[in-house]
Image (cartoon, rainbow, N blue to C red; front, side, top):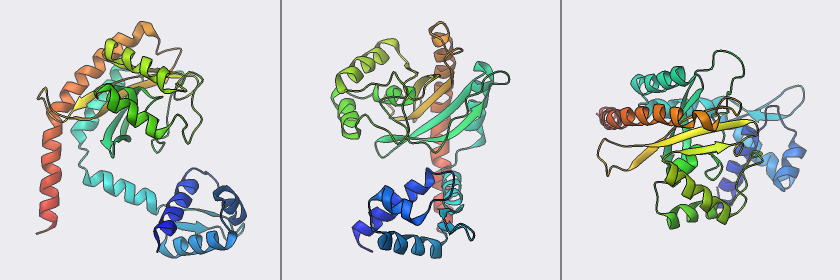
Length: 270
């Protein structure tokens, strides 16, 4: 396959991953601005490999569970241990909100775990497969706030201010607006997002490091999110304190997690 074919194949998979219902071949061609014949060759190959399935009645195409299976297998190999999950569970229980963990990957962040702490009223159950818009999320700003300003702004500028999903009404629309919010994050000591990533929601986030050493690199972020009517400025500091305690604990746990992952890789080669 050529590089172009690989790129088209990945774009097709990403499109199907964002659709809940199967999609017609002609619609795929229109949305990807490609000839129907080219799309047909791609989906036929993906069907043969088990990545895509075709509904026998409607003849429409959708993703199989193969991608989910591989994603779960990959998370398992990363040794996201029960003790890490227990930290999230405790924060969720303490804050009565949704707590999520994101890790650094390819100069970005990826959601890898969550715990739900809301037991009554409105619940925020975000899509864990959603791409993290760094400029519009508390987690993104929490990480970018640990970088030199020039580097942080370059990362955001290279990604742009759009996102695959609709952002909230308060999301930054230009680099100057984002620079002010990044400065606020550094001054405050934790990141916030109020109707920036999604309308009606708010979040608080802090980074955690790969070890307890003060100069250890940032490994990811931990955050809580929920309806704006609950996560108000009055509660920000309380939520940030809970997250900072969890971040300290994660920094203590992370080296053991990395060591377990290394040992698992070594044993697999024996």
